[in-house]
Length: 278
Image 1 (tube, rainbow, N blue to C red):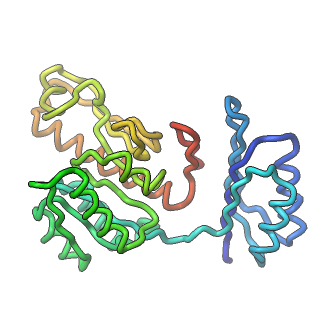
Image 2 (tube, rainbow, N blue to C red; image 1 turned 60 degrees about the vertical axis):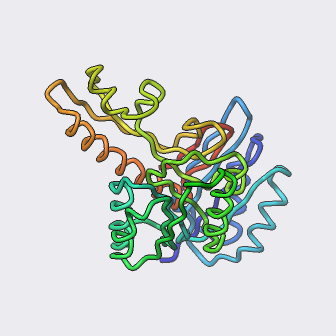
């Protein structure tokens, strides 16, 4: 049975769920799953539906537009398999995890290419038959580097960019070209242990929890809308090396989970937060 996805984002008003459900019924569709949320602070309504039945997209979209508030954003059957480009530096744990999941079709996406500012990960990527592009940042201004990066990314016209431990800060100009379309991962020590060697800093402080945060990139460093987070317990017996390995496990799991939710159209962005329909 073919299913359809319906996403609605609009100002809230009385009777919306009833109106939407009635419209769905009159178009001969069955609601399999319906999740909705009203953000009271902004009086905003978010809904994700899974439907079955014979769908005539233009007719349904027209009917919904006629009865929803004027600011309604309606998406019916967004592209099921997203095209993505991964940006990397030297750390391999998040990249390798996504490559394996992609190889076995566990993420709802097609990796079009991997772009790195070092050659270090080329061999790994090419083992999976994917193109790898090396764009160095050395001896270039930030603008020059990002111009080259953007040109290469734009060639693939991705739906999303995934920063799989890409250790460069992107400018507001670059981020603005992919608004709400860049996914990043960082350790959850921030902002407690900033700068170099966060795991060493954490070890020296004797932390008892480590974790990771996946978020949408915006113009505030590591402060974009959070998609998902995880933590694990650690203790004094773990060396720095073990702490790093444990942290890497959490980071790759959190990034994969964030990608899954975003690529399945389960994430709405509202200001600096997300609404996630798991």
